[in-house]
Amino acid sequence: MSNISRRKLITTGVVAATGVAGLAAANRIARRYGLVPPDSSGFYGPGETLTYAAQRLLTRHSLAREFPRSMISKVPFRNETAPSSEEFKRHQAAGFSDWKLAVDGMVAHPASFSLADLKSLPTHSQITEVVCEEGWSYVAEWIGTPLHNVLDAVGVLPQARYIVYFSIEKDWWESIDMADSTHPQTFLTMGMNDGDLPVGFGGPLRLRLPRQLGYKSVKYITRITATDSLKHFGKGLGSASPEAGYAWYAGI
Ligand SMILES: Nc1nc2c(c(=O)[nH]1)N[C@H]1C(S)=C(S)[C@@H](COP(=O)(O)O)O[C@H]1N2
Ligand SMILES: [Mo]
Image (cartoon, rainbow, N blue to C red; front, side, top):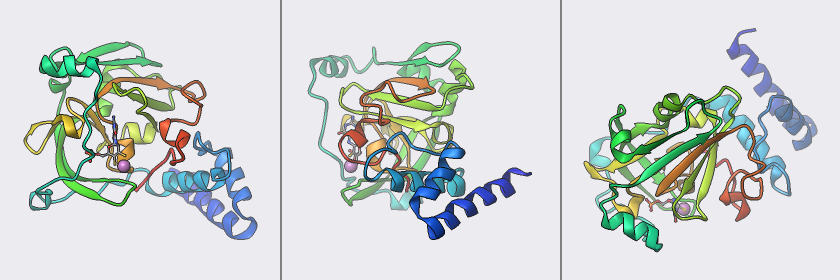
């Protein structure tokens, strides 16, 4: 069976099951096809599973909307944060010359990338929106290298199912599946609106992911790791967000 008709069949199954026998049946089908998010347990679990399974089957390869330059927000709203740690202040004082991105886990060649290393990879720009779950948003130009360039450089093993990424702010970490990790708009971002990425917006290095809500676009990235299971990260729910009551998959 071709990929498309197989996908259509599974989608029809998931949707029909919702109507006929409710969430439980849809969940059984999602489970059979490995479309269960890491935060699928608990009260909201069945709903999270249905959202994730349906999005993966229907919109896996779709692109987030890109805007014309004239739509770039004049005053981008931002969370007024800069990491308060001494470690970050030291990096900032040194112009981030020693900032490193460690890449490890299920990869053939674990490596560490400086900002200069990352800038030497093919870079692109995208004009996309940051959408916060609180209801505000803004449009900016983001310049960086698609995450898949770094994943290709280290040789992610075929067993890997997720990429987990960590901020220098210890309580900010997230993970995404391989569909989002290799999505062309998932960027390791070093520039914004024609300049370096300002600290307030996550500089020197941020993972921008316009297909999901703002909280997945973690700022001040220092490490990414490839894994086949999220059980051993934090409370095993996939990221810090579900530990605080937000969905792991925040597709928009
Ligand atoms: N390290 C870190 N990353 C973060 C946050 C944060 O406080 N710390 N806030 C998140 C949230 S909730 C949103 S909506 C966006 C906000 O992006 P902005 O500051 O560029 O507007 O960043 C996300 N990434
Ligand atoms: Mo947010």
